[in-house]
Amino acid sequence: MTRNAGSMARAGVAAAALAACAPAADVSSMGSFTPGYDGIETILLDGDLVNFRVAMTGARNNADVEAYARCAAAQYALIRGAGFARHVRTTVAQTGEIWRGDAVYTISAALPKGFRTIDAEVTVRDCGSLGIPTV
Picture (tube, rainbow, N blue to C red):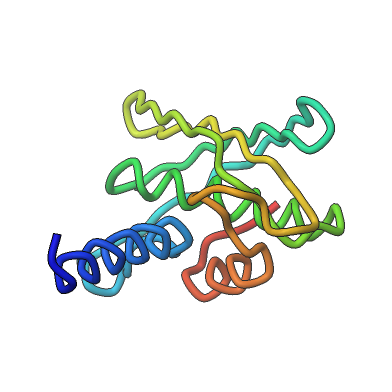
């Protein structure tokens, strides 16, 4: 691998890591979007492992549902006095007009290891600017 190729590979890894922390897609460039946020259920599974179940209408795709769950996880982390969360998994299902997300996050005071981590304070602020409710 040449020096430029190595630099490009490292840049790609850095971009992927940043993308995992990024908020939902910019809704202003995707046309009309009128979501209905229909509730968040929070279930403490074990210590710092938390399940978030969300429901919404008007989602464009799975990413909108995942963003809603991420916002719930970020606010929950702040409520619990933690500053970070790490995404474990999210499943999304659609029945008619109702989209449901079932997400699991670990909540921690220190930045956890892994690529799919979120800074709770920054994420909650971003969620507010996008109009996505939190817990």
